[in-house]
Image (cartoon, rainbow, N blue to C red; front, side):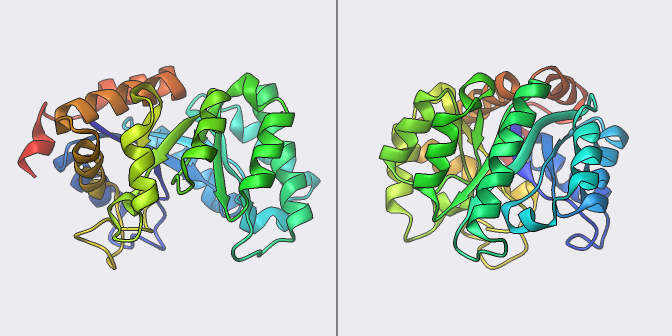
Length: 274
């Protein structure tokens, strides 16, 4: 089955209801979803609540680099406690984004480094966001305890040199719909080259819908299109990509995700019929 290793699920983006979104994902062969808990306390707590309500969903807890300036002692304390929840499989997404710089770079680096330490304390992997900040991202990951916890560079968009360095740290790389975009040739090279035991697939819903759905609101069901493209690039079957990325997600996110997969109501091979 397919696993969407990174999606944002909230009613602002999906006013028809999350149950309908999950049902469409299951119909496309998606067996489990990793719901990213960022965007303020209410959205973060909502991601964890969804994971408790739906067996097919697990959650993460973190502070997106856009929101780094909002982190204070009170929010940090509440997030740390929430991150201990048994349905929370990772700390994130956290990281650096120098494209928009909604928070100052210095603050982003401080908050990112802080959550690397939190991940180490909780013994949970990291979900890392990096955009136009490759050098600083690598500096923080290579100089701190990130090697101890591992994690994933989500929505991977860098080149092979960056990929090699994060792979050397024990990290995974996760491919989103960007790998289907016309101007993403360097990313497709990484998707074709990366070790099979270190790749994941994701949607980053509601963003970055893959070709042939680009421009539409993205949702977990669309991870099938990304999986097909990665399979083509690697010269393997869709079934192999399903199995490989599901196994990798299970290794990264552990027992809660394994339980979510076991609870999934997806017929074997159903993705092939979509």
